[in-house]
Image 1 (tube, helix red, strand yellow):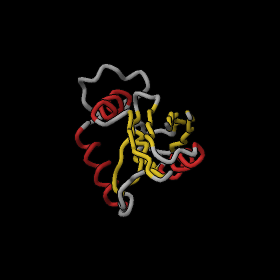
Image 2 (image 1 turned 90 degrees about the vertical axis):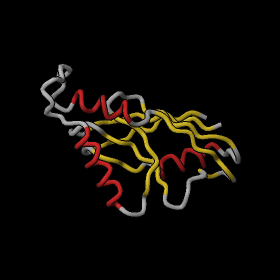
Image 3 (image 1 turned 60 degrees about the horizontal axis):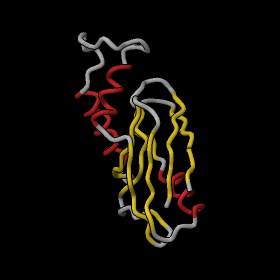
Image 4 (image 1 turned 135 degrees about the horizontal axis):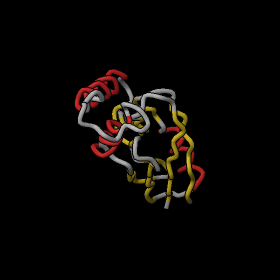
Length: 134
């Protein structure tokens, strides 16, 4: 089963998509297998992170923003604004795909794990995440 999720991001940061991916897995009716996720963009990424305490997301977002300075004058790829090249660098440093085992018809995530679409641009976007369950 292949399904494409459309995710609206209102801002830069981590947007939890665990429930949407869980629905896709449930709909596939696969008891044991693998869920593969792929984001079809070069300025957003995917990650699995803690979903219990929002301060973990806040700290990760802050750290990545400090690591990749959008005001670096050496960036030449700025056609879509000052966050254009920094968003590509952030996506290169993180992941564009994830693989999660399916056990007993559910994602085999740990107690505190959630799946996140990480929007690296500052303005809202519609992002596509391909979900393959097999």
